[in-house]
Image 1 (cartoon, rainbow, N blue to C red):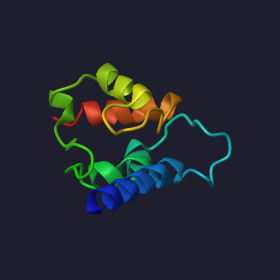
Image 2 (spheres, rainbow, N blue to C red; image 1 turned 120 degrees about the horizontal axis):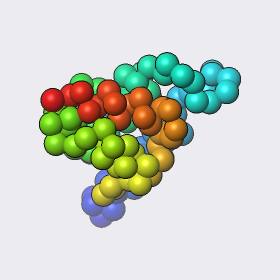
Image 3 (cartoon, rainbow, N blue to C red; image 1 turned 60 degrees about the vertical axis):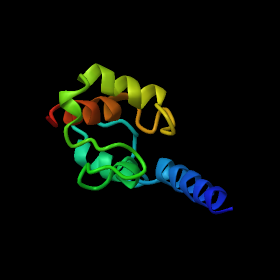
Image 4 (cartoon, rainbow, N blue to C red; image 1 turned 90 degrees about the vertical axis):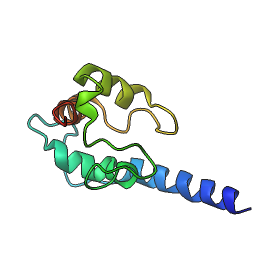
Amino acid sequence: MKKKLLALLMGTSLALAACGGGGDEAGGDKAGADPEKLFNQKCSSCHGGNLEGGVGPKLSDVGSRLSQEEIESVIANGQGSMPPKLLEGEDASAVAEWLANKK
């Protein structure tokens, strides 16, 4: 019973995280998007505010394991329990570049 409740809570938090942020900007994708702000809005609920991990893996040194292109692929396609396309377009590229520099 506890596992089912935990799974329900994790699924709900993922869904809410996927829907959060970005509502006060007109036009969606913006050149020069702040990747740290985007990460905090869309990713930190699972990966931690300091990239320390939590429900999702630690990302503080992800650039030493994955290239920017590989990170973009994970963002686009999802991996494990991470749903695909939480970020898209220039936002995904900006966050992937920012994370690729975390070594």
